[in-house]
Length: 504
Ligand code: NAD
View 1 (cartoon, rainbow, N blue to C red):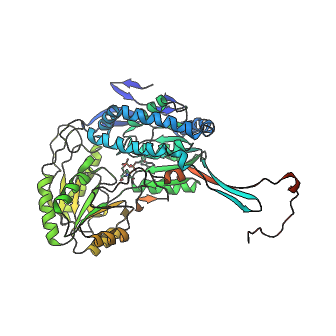
View 2: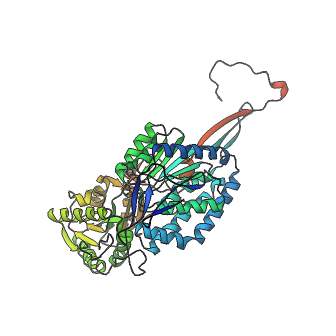
View 3: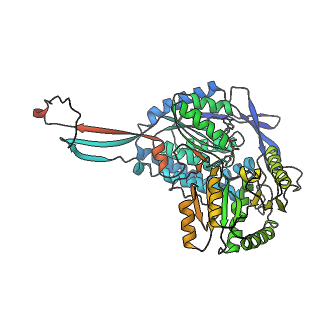
């Protein structure tokens, strides 16, 4: 049950199919970034609460894994229909707690549904391999089985899409899932819980445990959790990867990004600017795949691109999540706003040129920042080296495509990148040589569709798992290989062999 005190409600966990009150006595504030107000309190689970939830999930797993994959998929089908039916309600919730516009929230739900669609393919993706007569009447086959209880730990910036991407396939292939959403946006995860319940998912197969580092550490250390999918900042992603694998778990850990857009001299500048605006400033730049650096090749390209961009950035409108005219909303917290302003201030001291200044956007309430654009940023500046999770975007000018490729390849992050060009050989060289996981050619944000694998390289991803895509079915299952022989009764007497068996 949700408790309401002084008009502020305390949320719950979702354990064993029920909204369950927190017992730790610890909570954190949930803000509405658009209005700067506290809209709820998030319970922060203790280690004991996490362990209890894992026990309930483990009990549910033992039954869920025995349900046929066809029946499991029917439940996922119903869940998908509910997501479509209740998109408006969920989008409102996402907007209120994350600050992103309703249109953007609907976009994220749509991409989340792609992951659910992929999970509907579980019967196909679970098919094993079969070889007949591999030796002396022996047949050999492989089977994919669920791991058991698995966990997903998600960030604030996609309250629905990332949890859906991390968990849909895990459930479809027969696991029980514990989701630990960001404590900044727990409402959307609890809403998904109601939809799972309504779709008929057995109690305990889906659990939401709210919390902070204590809950994450409890997940990392619980021996009944066999795999962890993490999405968040690189520092925490690296910690989760090392601590999880040290405890013998499978871990796919996705971190931050610094995504470049290379603009070649032959590119259509209008197209490049239009693409940059949405990809760079959408969701107040709080996307791991947001374009943060424009990298025009050659002075003429840089002058044309920056001049056009300046004109267009000035027209962008910032507003509350439910303002239909807003291009993007507030950033997640006041602290986040202060951090972005600090990056801008420091880059100016280091010699960057301020083209558009969004630091002083007027608002009585809410964590608003206008769009900022800085030119003549150099690779030694902090604003280039680090991920900036807010609407301060930059241009780093280069002279050649090789220079662009070298700089991008030397960067700590390797999540997404895109090139705008009409030159086929340049695009081919770029896609072959670039050390980045998701690469675009003349597209603004190269996020793969749900049925392709998603994941960066370098310090944007730890572990070899992917999110979205068929690789999720592999990540959430173990493979067994069986060799079997069914001899006629008269042939049962086997001859003992002491040499290693060979087919030769
Ligand atoms: P975050 O790292 O602060 O939090 C992510 C999760 O980790 C949350 O559930 C949080 O409760 C938990 N957490 C936070 N600090 C922790 C600690 N010290 N120990 C253990 N757990 C901890 O990230 P965020 O601010 O919520 O999300 C933004 C970040 O996520 C950005 O860096 C963004 O690039 C990244 N991101 C990456 C992808 C991707 O696919 N690579 C997708 C979305 C977001």
